[in-house]
Image 1 (cartoon, rainbow, N blue to C red):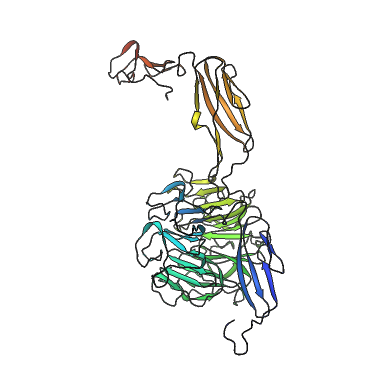
Image 2: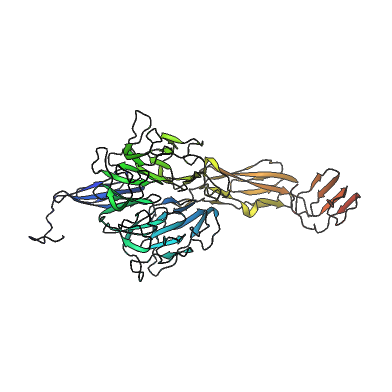
Length: 589
């Protein structure tokens, strides 16, 4: 209760509860929440008597999950938060934004080791800015790494770092506490307290910190006006803040109408987005920001957008920027409905549905999962066979964007620009076809070649199933492995993977995991008594080489370039042993 001249008693008795996504969690009239499936929603507590509301974030994390799994994109890097509270990073790392202690880019996910704390806190949320990363831990503290020339890391200095450091408080003598949400724009950072207030720090040329000036801050300052925020989303040089009453505040740069207020004037104090009638917009349940545009998901599951539209990212069929929200469309006559969640970055937008998602905007490198490089101005449906939990784009607004999605099994697909390893497929090749980086595999590295000396000798195949990168689980689905010999005259294989040699020669054993439909192969050499490898003969242009069963190599013929390995260039009219080849087991031609 605030100041009241008549009473200190809270007057409200008519309180109701509402889940903003009942497919994730429901809530009854006593405020008891019931999980339905993995995902995130908000439950609103509404005091109808006093016209007050508050929102509580509800994460349904899945079996053994401590946090809601997610993936976020920086300018050219990704960070994945697993359900067990561990972090992984990949992509560009020139400023240490991956928090791995160096500035080496990664082409596959690598675990990020957060600093140890006495209370054993762990990451519960992560966001990425231009070339830096923010992490919220379970104890309500905020940590940061990477680029810091504008004070993005909240350290009261401009020193870039390659390891996570704890964000300081307003006076720089302690640290931010009791934080429940974080956001990052291009070079400005935001933290939300449990009371719904917002702290901001970093770059502030356009007033995006919301403190009524354009002075960059090296330490957090409390944003003015806003006191009941439930979600935040950063543009490049502005931010959108969802109020618990269903309205949306914006502040910062507005040259391309990204604040959604009907004009192009920058704002250094938060102002509310307008609806199509020029009044305050309400009934919003989620916001997502691109470079200079905002996507809005309303409680009726319709999607709207406002701001810069040069690539069609507003999904209204045009490339004309809009100062007032417009409905997103599948075609000129069909507005999109039944949207579950939204995300945006750079000049691209995505709307998640029960199956698959709609995409629109910049697609120069195929980041929209459309398997082409054509921009979209209307919404296109993609990945229709998948149940998508979340997704992200990199923020790169120069064109080279990368896309990533997570399905309900925790598997991750990436697509698009890959020059810094953004696709996490261990290459730097750009791809328009989505790549699954969560592939299971049968690991036979302990015995990928098996040499058997004697006939009727037995050997056991060693293998193990390995889980690829997965944001929900490390548990391998129960595998049923079958074994097949490609030549039973050389060697047979039993149901338990026991190989029995039958005659001298080479064959292959195929392993098939029927549960997950994955394969592996093992080469089997039956070499004969006293031999360690399979005998082999091969020819060059004018010379021969042979591998004997005892592991020695012999050659004859032309030797003008030393190809016989005799440490000279003299031709040989009969077989001579190559030097230093007493125990060769295989060769590559």
